[in-house]
Image (cartoon, rainbow, N blue to C red; front, side, top):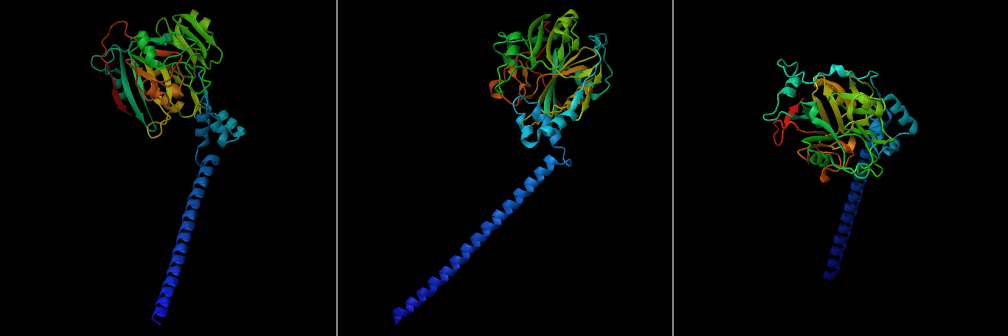
Length: 381
């Protein structure tokens, strides 16, 4: 009798345990359903938001995405991943740069016109001509804007600017830092474009023409834009004439690239974002007083610097009164070196000292002016 009671109690306990276990299983099942449902809802919201951004004019995403992808060397497929060929073509046709048809007026450039400068017209003018102590050659201004960061190098004497090319031009390129070291450069930026078939490239085969010391040292198909360089009088010359004719007109050093952003003080007309998207940029410019400006914008670095549009670049240059300016090779090639070392943060190749390029604009000091080991001024605008 006693054993029967024990068995009955144990059966009740077992039955109660099974019921509890069933409830727990059912609860876990419902919990899983709730989690899946919540995840599905959130995923749906994300997809809907993405579709709204991509396919409606509420957010101008496609005019950012398509030109940015189409101006890369190896990632154009990203534009076609989200949009049809017709949409890509339409967006690109609405975003372009209308360059000035004027010829550069070299007579407008008066070298050394800033020597008697006493009254500054703006804070940028003051920043430009307040030289760093012990440095009469150049000054580096740090730029920090909404969405991007970069550097503006001010070169006071345009005769200190020259073009540097690799020792084995056509066979092997070199980093901007190495080109500076090999050619006595204090500061350097990358110049024209080059074949980049594998997405990295070694700068061995430049696109377009290269003029060095009044000689045509390279001429290759694929050049896009016009000649960007300096005459024997150290005046920046932007032209679409042939290299031979440019040399006859006094061109000393030049690369072929573009577009021209400012000509005779007049900015190019930018339709949309110009068709160049937002990316790292390298630009070279000159003021009416002969002062040369090297501009390098860092980009494609989320959380640090996304990059700049052509409108952004023009705005910066006009602040500092650039009179003539031209776009150079950008993207992963946008590089700046100081004292023979990589100075900026390129979007690729930073661990190697910057990618190899086919040429660079460098700052020398042949007149042995005062220059310190390093010179950087912070500027937040």
